[in-house]
Image 1 (cartoon, rainbow, N blue to C red):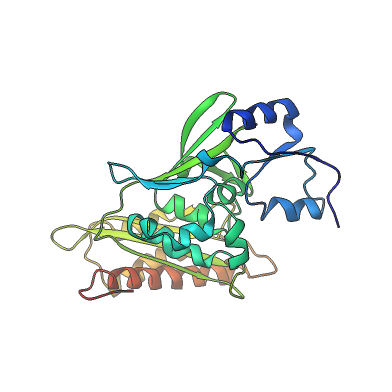
Image 2 (cartoon, rainbow, N blue to C red):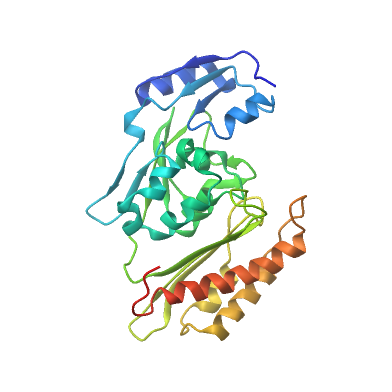
Length: 294
């Protein structure tokens, strides 16, 4: 199938894009990498009257670390750039490690971080990573610029806090301690498929070897990416180890409430979610061990 007729615009500035979206109303859509929107248009699931292509706006691209060690990534930065960039590998290795799990290389070559967040597929990796890392999502729209915490951004399946005419401009990740323990685990039917369930994990250790802060986030387990606060609480203030990790995994199983679909049952997702939590925590701890280089 092919999409119905639409108008196409390619502005070279954010200001021009905002003007165009205001002129063409609710039926217009921004186009980022097009890896989700274009297939939806081909199947006529989406039928925008106008596409406003953001690929020509240079200010929406770029990767940098500021003087406060925060990582800034422009919304139109390609997933493949995130996968290959050495700055990101140092400034946020969890994000860097998750990127190769996203679809296939052809899609990563075109797909963007901003597009993935705006699409808000609950099984997608990027939404889960920004939530796990407590990132800020900067946007601009008719009412001006604003910053949205990742925890407030995802509102439901394919639903976000973005208002009509608003676009993501940048994602800002907080400083990443060099000694942080981290891991990303997911399971899918085939390489490149959406995750049936995935877990992003990190924790910090204090001077006495106890966990001082922790984050556990699930993808593919609900209408949005989900933090697992009960499991995080079990980790807090405790020395890491197999017994503690098993307790956290069981807490995750108890708080996960996924749905069933043609890919996996709710029971399978819940059980595997616990396995992945335990596996991720053990892998994360290995990164603190002397000589660990993976």
